[in-house]
Length: 331
Ligand code: SF4
Ligand code: SF4
Image (cartoon, rainbow, N blue to C red; front, side, top):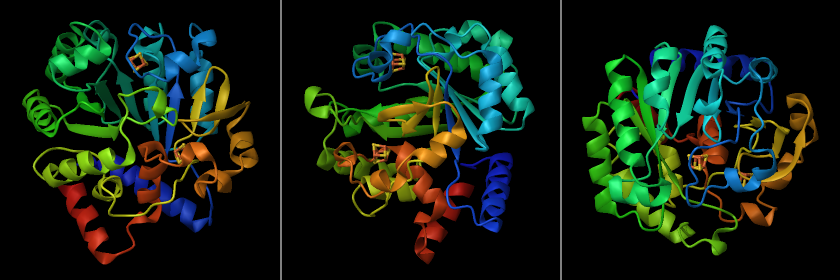
């Protein structure tokens, strides 16, 4: 199944509760950036550039758990920087799992093999390893030998009984043949699912590795066409949006981001300010401005942080969409 029974149950319960109380805006995934420190310097990484002044700072375990209490999202993505550089990563994960939230811990995989002994498999815990292509492509972006270390760590994690998925950003030079070869290779490693997202930056003119809109549509049209044969975790409706077949409005509050500076507003991708509390962020951000795409930085954005929540919160209103989503969930 694409969505585990326990995640499906938590998500359905949460959505029904919010519907019952007629809540207009509520978060689905908390992006918890516990540190921006990283042991790599990947090409195109916005985080290590935007937060270079505070890169060495870390959220304490208490701050992380308080943030999870503030933001009721059923899913928490623990990310960075490289979250495994946090000395208390095990305590942070255990604390969130104890609150019965579903954790996706994003990592570049370099420190994963050594950290596994501090972590415990759980139905609430998923390891998400960043792999941007086969060895040559991934190493060109992340550094020499990174592919080998990350894929070795995936093997170890699977052997130790963890749930492991991968996250691949598709850049300009990622060919269709490589995408399919990569999916096949990753499934051979035993991964439980694969996420893909378009390499996008609102400053993309400054960096030629990012895709423009028609390239996103082309590449994701191909991914949609093969998604039935592989464990692609992105919803089919989001893939249809990426291939230009559906219109979706952004849901910028769907994936709120918390980091050392506070609650990032308006979204994971762009920063106008940081608020002290989650409530302040929800109440003070001019959501309509971003949802309607009135900010020029939103113009070509198709990022999952803004548009996957739109799918969960009602993108699939046609019967054919509902059937396709149901088939996808149980595949
Ligand atoms: S591993 Fe992630 S946070 Fe670190 S440099 Fe690469 S993209 Fe940025
Ligand atoms: S469209 Fe993109 S950049 Fe704009 S608010 Fe939504 S996710 Fe952020």
